Image (cartoon, rainbow, N blue to C red):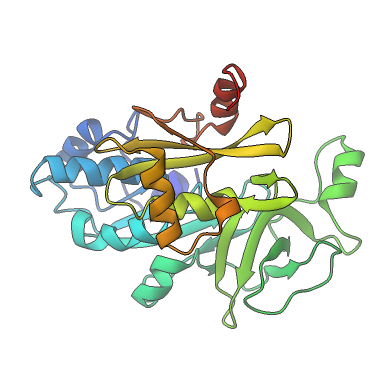
Length: 299
């Protein structure tokens, strides 16, 4: 609704066109008909649009589109770099949360910054820092927990003192559960979620790191790495892939090794599927993927 969303457009006396889903078959004609200048997508929808543009032979009716905002989940640098050339518009990365903090890349930022970061806070009064596992501040470039406090950040969950005790520190900074790093200029790079880690025999695997590397493969359209229970190691990993052409597990692992991935981070299982299940807000439904694995026999 906001940030800037529909409310921001109305405030600027603009027009909002609503689509019932983000598919290219629905949205491309709407963009052409209403001469839409800006729109917003989640990363899985970006992949679908890029695929559709290739199928249209580069003749998709997107000439009026000047800005694409992408948020809701981290956009891989591989996909981000393709947007200006293939969709033909400027990219603006957005990273925020219902609890408060909102970050953007600026329209006049360098291409490198727009592709590789999720921007900086929109409000100069937002306070953001990175904490280690013990709550101590980390220096620029180090990965840790996002801590934030600001004029529009909420002050607590309703009637949930136990949850609030773990979500806020003694100084009122909210811990979002995101793993980030911040550079010297205050630009944030999202590295995943604390809970989206796979504990393989004590070795931690950040799912988002492997997913972004998998998306570099020319045959991979979508990728999701999830945990599956294992008697010996506690958890193993499974990579769900939507692909343009068949891929075998040995090919996937070889590709990741070539990207410098450690052996323990290589997927124990690879599943090629027609599509990935999505939540109502367009994020990959990893809970459903884990349930699929739980209903099958172990490796």
